[in-house]
Image (tube, rainbow, N blue to C red; front, side):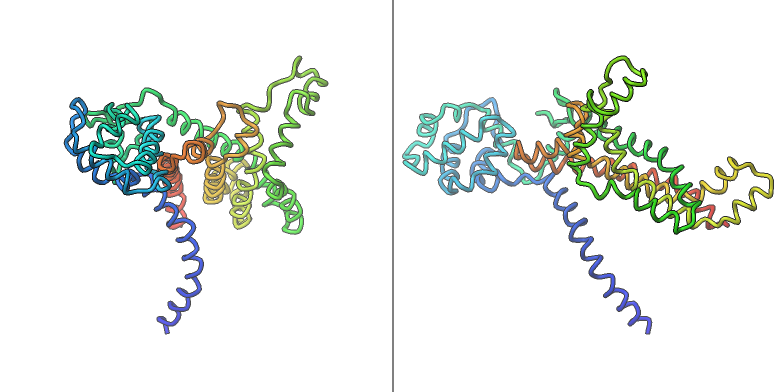
Length: 393
């Protein structure tokens, strides 16, 4: 009987579990593999990579390396060289043009008896060590180059890891999490009193207010962003009201900066903070609060020592939802923020779409996910005392 019950439960859960695996687990695995995969060049230049094994960058390029390169270039049509050429271009800007030109030249006339002379006659850069060092650096099939680049690190010639001369992604990661934590804190400060008030109301009175609370989620993200731009611009209603009330003497810059980003993101994410807290607060027995008051506890003590600890799970759920959503924002900071307010999502898009560097985009995602999971782990450590106290009770 129990076997049939477990089998039925498994069949009921199978669609949901399969869906989660398909849309969550598999993409994460693919993203991680893409961040360390480096097989594009090896797939089209296998003989060249083998011939370059043990080559010293200070020594001349051997004749057999040119012969191996000519065979590899002739073996693969030009239409199939896109990914490999892009990968070499990451190592050496301009390498894409050199490789694709060499492929087309060999398709038209062939290398002849001397591949070295033919390639050097077509492009003198084949005689420079840079293009060959790029091939060696991209030989794959696996690499941690992009994970290091996502942390502004690079592997030096002697194998040690050092900070890159141009550091950008660390600052972007820090900026992303600062904005996400700021939005989470603002939503918590604004949402906690609202959730307490809604939980104190009868269900029939709270329901209409919850519908009003959900209105921002029913509006297009572009419409919301443009609405805040119109409201917060120098000639907008907010600045005009401040000027009319003589609070400021000149318009305050409230948009296309960090202020606009925080305001617009808080407007959208506030319901995600309030709803989990409201759900947790509705389940707290009211007789506990009356009992605490009858024993002499002040309202503040009752709230802090009786009410708030039992809301900890709801607060944590709200913080996770808001933090996870805020840290992955892309459109709102791009429209409402300034150049120094762009978050990680914008740079992932630039790496993937503008520079066609999918490995770097995946590496940025892996680093972000690792930091995010670390912060979620710290949040669960904060929840453990509350869980232990409930078990003991």
